[in-house]
Image (cartoon, rainbow, N blue to C red; front, side):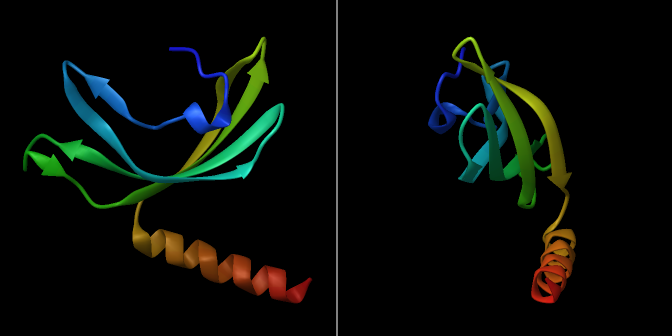
Length: 96
């Protein structure tokens, strides 16, 4: 399905009728020809038959011909890793 607005972008991914990646929340960081979106999501764990721990992803999209295409992504695999990134960013932004 073509996504023509940043609000339509999602991480939800369904395979064989099962929602394998569930978007929990999303924040649009930038809009325009290049959009940056941060997602909070969970992966389906077939072993436990439930969604796993919360993860985060930052994705960049380029809009061409009125459609967004994902160009890059960075996945943050745990809340612990997210806290470390936050601490470093807080330190760096305080220094500037």
